[in-house]
Length: 372
Image 1 (cartoon, rainbow, N blue to C red):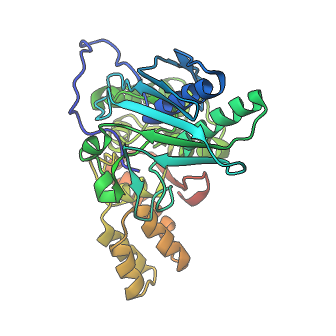
Image 2 (tube, rainbow, N blue to C red; image 1 turned 60 degrees about the horizontal axis):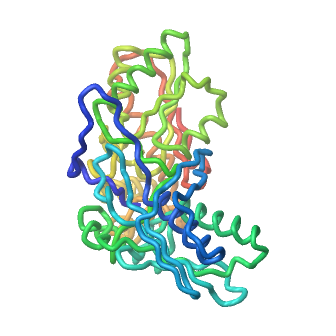
């Protein structure tokens, strides 16, 4: 889904030499607001601050910026703090309205003002659904389940997430291009926003390589995200110091390895990001590189796709949609992309004595391709 980051359009007051301050995702804020609203609806009082548990176990507390309660519903709002990240949603108000649903209906989510609706395929959310990513959805469902168990009631509630300024802010993201209409996406996989700083992040990658070399580690991991990192960790028993926080900066990692080699690196990531690497991109961030659908369709042609299938891939909305189209026709695009991504990685490494393994992982943690 489109990133909330929008280059560096938001400034912060962090001083040179000071560490950048982390922030909270829209998903974490929506979860906290939902917990506060549902607690008020059930108990008659808002918890302020409200504490939630993030996917990796952290328990941040959020101050409430908005409270409304009636016998039928409760609304809680939280001002998003993105830390020192240049995020268009910094200081946006994230609201959750929780109301009773029909008996037996379960939990239902709705897109309120400023939250987008998905209108095109290829995203991890079905067409017609609110643009709330799977992890925030799961976090909010867990909050509802926990409170309902406490009160011995059924989980029959309607949750409406809104961002009053979201429609305007969404014009600064990729959402309109991706067919997410009406506002922002509610995002986040860990609940935490790591501040975006190219130089600081790449510096930390370099230091990770230095530590690996100094401790005699011969095999390191560079993953684009937590899902691919988890899968690679299941395949290899990497020590903590061998896991490099690569993120989108594959170019910065490989260029440093060129002069400071280790025997082997496993690069793990999703299909879309490694398609960009296969096409020559060294920065895989959605705001700074895009998938060339014509080039992707050409790979499908080489693998035997007919012209109608090639046309479908060319006009696909996202790399994920293109992958789904190819997979249904038994065209193994991930394997082709893995080979090309490895070729590009070796090109960046030049003649450095580094073996490169490419591991392409699906959003639900399945290995789509593995090439060494």
